[in-house]
Amino acid sequence: MKELIDNNHSLKDVIFEVAEIADYLWQRGWAERNAGNISVNITGLIGEHLSNMDPFPSFELPQPYSELAGEYFFVSGTGKRMRDLAREPLQNALIIRIDDKGSRYHILSRDEGHISGFKPTSELPTHLGIHRMIILRDSKEKVVIHTHANELVALTQIEKFCNEESLNKLLWGMHPETMVFIPEGVGFVPYVTPGTEQIAEATLKALENHHVVLWEKHGVFAIGSTAFDTFDLIDILGKSAKIFFLARSSGYEPQGLTEEQLEVLKELSANF
Image 1 (cartoon, rainbow, N blue to C red):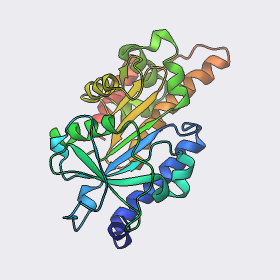
Image 2 (image 1 turned 135 degrees about the vertical axis):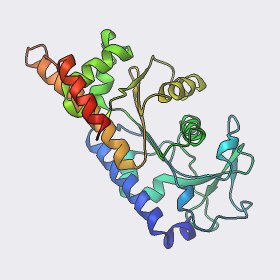
Image 3 (image 1 turned 180 degrees about the vertical axis):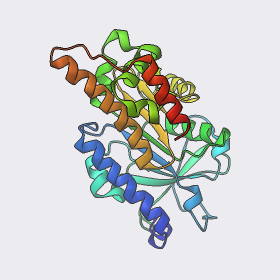
Image 4 (image 1 turned 30 degrees about the vertical axis):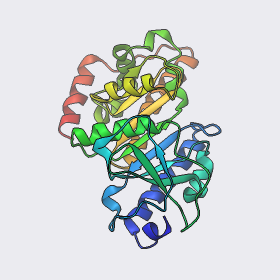
């Protein structure tokens, strides 16, 4: 890993950006203990691809990802805290490479001959499934972030908002920026046990038409071209949810934007 990073300023920038976002997640209270995970497709940043993977340990994936064969990813580690990732990214995240068959991944160590004891996030299958979807549809997203955004999780504790129509009507109505920057709204996944194949499949389906997906009573998955762009999507949605709860906590029912106002914002978004 050291050789890959030392003279690669673009890769260093991405790692610094991920560390900064990890700090934001922790400071917001969205990453309790080891909650949340981040992955970035860094294949385009690896100048000289490694030809011999034998020195690096490999682990079998639960299913093959042939479309990701030979791809490189920077991935947060399992059991690692975002606050630690922010301070020491290379001690709490890994660079991995999917093998040429797409059935295993190699961990590239920080130092030659040294293999750290941790593996990628337990949500790796969900991350890889999303990255495969991105490649198949030839879009520009490189980053996947999963976090526990408090106000958004709180919304999914309210039954009336546990569907896409009601949820998006609320989020769009609380703050103009939400319609401008997230006109397609958010996807919604009813509660499924985290880390399972079922939640990975449901998330992929929801991301077909959205950049952000809420997991009921759990958290958020978002995709974007950079870590900052991806965080911004969650941040904007969190602001809308927070405005809703602030109005409710003051004893008033939020008025929300009218349909006419939202239509104007939607047109503005299309020309943004």
